[in-house]
Image (cartoon, one colour):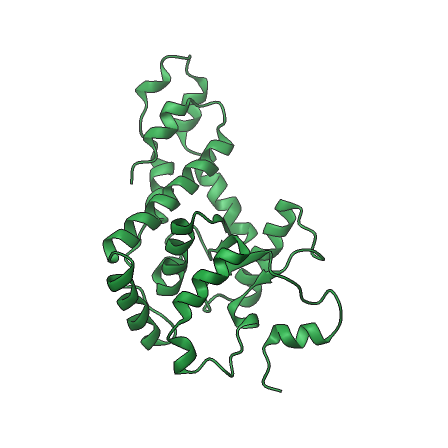
Length: 238
């Protein structure tokens, strides 16, 4: 009684629980089937991950919700840093690529900052429909498509693409000062920690934005591998 969900799984037998291979950063407000389950299913399919060897650390399942009292919550930042470092991989779940809920949540922004700070390998996952929408938005960009057809040497004349700019802007609307938490005292606590120990709101915002721009550009490069490196370097500006 009063155990965590993962402890209950572990009691069911071998293979139901194991050492974490990935840390999941997500918002508790996501619909279970439309976002949470759909995003994980697509990610595992795309990465060809073995479900018998993939164990995702999810706060809801792994934290003992009966025992997270005020005392335990006070050092969650330090606990989180140690946990992410030991796992070594962070998977961030977005509900949508256009102004996602994710970046309005203080814990999510904090988790991304820590991952970038520690140099932890990270990736962003979305449900199938959002992944396709994201890809189609980039593929439909007339400037990017035109660049593919330009002769070598003329490509440097085009520096801006509307779709890529829109994608980057949608995923970099980050203001941790205004971010919220399901438990309001958590927002106060995390923001205080950011101001006192992590260099302030501006540093966190800029670091996470840069990481997101890099991710956006990397995804776009996968779709347009023939475009010159110089073009992609220009797209990294925040």
